[in-house]
Amino acid sequence: MANEANNFQELISHCKEYGYIFQSSEIYDGLAAVYDYGQNGAQLKKNIRDYWWKSMTQLHDNIVGIDAAIFMHPTTWKASGHVDNFSDPMIDNKDSNKRYRVDHLIEGFADEQRTTGNDKLADEVLASMDALLAKDDYAGLKKLIEDNNIKCAVSKTANWTDVRQFNLMFKTEFGAVAADNPDDNIVYLRPETAQGIFVNFLNVQKTGRMKIPFGIAQTGKAFRNEIVARQFIFRMREFEQMEMQFFVRPGTQMEWYNFWSAERKKWHESLGIPAGKLRFHDHVKLAHYADAALDIEFEFPFGWKELEGIHSRTDFDLKQHQEFSKKKIQYFDNDLKEDGKPYGNYIPYVVETSVGLDRLFLTIISLAYAEEKWTKEDGTEDSRVVLKIPAKIAPTKLAILPLLKKDGLPEIARELMNDCKNSFMCFYEEKDAIGKRYRRMDAIGTPFCVTIDHQTKEDNTVTIRYRDTMTQERIAISEVKNLVLEKIS
Image (cartoon, rainbow, N blue to C red; front, side, top):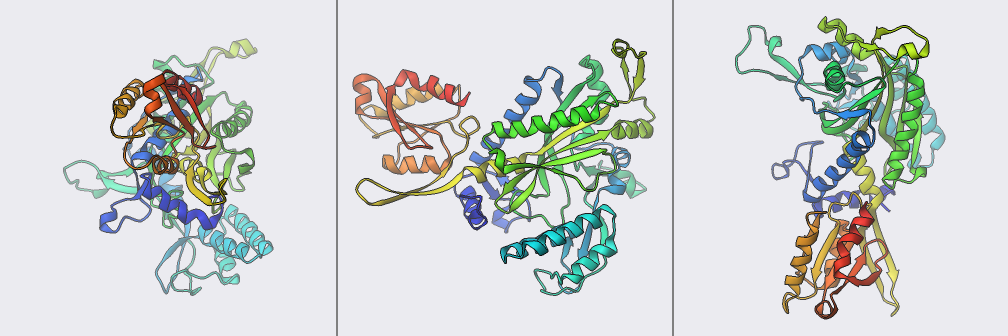
């Protein structure tokens, strides 16, 4: 399975070969840590996004969605703390001039120790790192690196600079006319989607007549100038987030924090992710805006890593935007009287759920990828590579395969295609032997294949094949559409 680290490269190659993910600008030798989604990858990504959007907005009557712009007034990022605080501890190797994020450098060393069976040292180093990061002890972090003789992967030396902070936001210029002061034209590519929700809090609350508690959801691109972007699409410079900010009364935030932590883990399990592959990890060091935070981690092929973050952000964001904008951002709660409290205005507290769409894509694809071998009845060996993507989010739901390119079979197949394609994604193919077409559909991840043969002309039945079990059954052609709809619902 692809959960084994030694199969990760095979998974990456498979994603390219079958139209899931391509290196961006590959004909120009690519752009580091930037990827394009191919025809199957774009559809799978859309299906995951739609599944999240439906579960958040359609299935909750107190959560609505917005789509805020990527560009925001630069004061937004001053108010949010990103200009002053959105940075990571970095260290440079003096011999190679290669820059590393300190936690990634140390985590990489710990991973190397585990491959040699030295789990105790790996655990000790990571525990020391967490404690030093929590105290912002940069001198201690450098000493930890030096004491363990952690070396640069390029120069193979441990000749390090001091640890220092590096801001991760991308800057660009806004407007066509040069300003007298260049800083007047500076805007940022957003490093997160949350601030677009916060600055629109009153717009949504008033126009939607929303009552606390309520949530605002959003999906969209974010950009971070990661120094060490790695592990395929796990950490990229351009990525997509799916976030929901849930606004609550002050004092109730921990109740909702616990609710959404459990709710989000159950949601991931609803996508077919085994509970044993998910775990909660409480933050050792809290962000400046949070009074509680945890990650939902998944066991990727390269180890346990963050999939989704749950944060109790207090009233920090709305309070900051109120201060910097000089606009009153408060909620008048006329339901407080029901609790024996007077009516009143307050700045709501916020519980955030934030999942990386690209990371969730990688989660789904790494769980789905399998290399299977078996012995057939005649004693010969057979094998296949298959993507067992859950049918409800698979890029293509049904492949329609006429056995021959003649005798009226393509016409029947096209008629079935036209009947189904308004309801779900279908794929038509008549090239190659049927066995080869089955294998190709397995590799793409198509859960159902229907074969049109000469018997179809006689009794209007077809053979439907199930990807995961490779079993086949004969059903009426009129039942195909409803069967697939039932399986993907």
